[in-house]
Length: 395
Image (cartoon, rainbow, N blue to C red; front, side):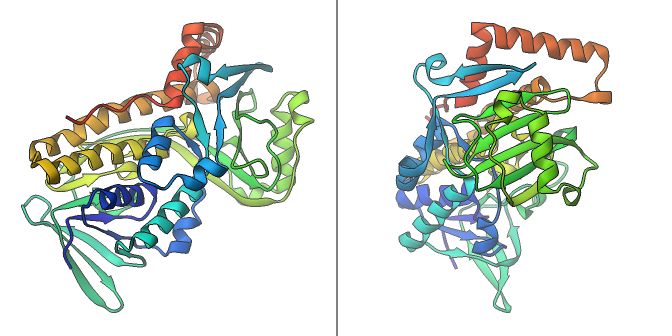
């Protein structure tokens, strides 16, 4: 098999890159080691920055999102029992976010891929890039009892943190930056109406809370829990009881409970690898960086990477601008690090670090909360980062 760009991974970043390149007349082949049902079974966040929304529209896959997604003009910050609305639209000259689940984004992209007729291979085993440092890279994978080879010009590694793409770059080339947090998020998804029409980020002495949503009838709630907690020990009743204990009475009384559709614990970590490219292999999304979900940046940073790689490859094929290839990693990383900073900042601001924090750090945390939530400039800073910083122009 031959293609121009081989894409490893059929998550949202791989599918979005494939759709954009296909629309631009560039041949792609997507290879995914899991089945379509497994890919759609991943429960992830669903707050889309305005730049991500516009990129999905550019890809021609935004019809259902625009019809069913919820445009949010603000979020609520709850500290010390005091509720404060962050007016995103007013603080950012009209920018907003879209609440639309990552699963739904993936579903829309999968359907678009199928309708386009562009090739995608699921349940591929032993996917492996080769000769990424040379002029003729290729992929191999096993399917239906035999090995297949895909010759290509470039390889995009969109296969996540545990994927093969990053592991194909020599360890001596990569610099890893990492911060592991001493807690995780216990998440519960339920077919219940959201407790509030906008998201609530809450700091509490018992631990952080996020009241989120997927639609007007489906809610997603998160509790900060110690890393050693097991999801099996959290019955639905225990979860709802703890959630109510961390919310002000007026909010707790509005909470509608119900059976969990899904429940899981995710540890929090920050990770970035540099560079995000080696030879003709480019890392995209979770293959290159992980953020704690507090800043709602995971999917959005993946879309940011896609934006840069897509625009660079279009100029390579249409204008012969191969000089731009070396700009992918620096451009992507400038925005990645800003997203990492904001996610780290929100995590520091709103979580209880307990014994992992000394008196000085607690005072600094309290001073940050007082300043940022009590200052017009501080609120504008949070809002600007939350709706998403602008993309650089690829020129």
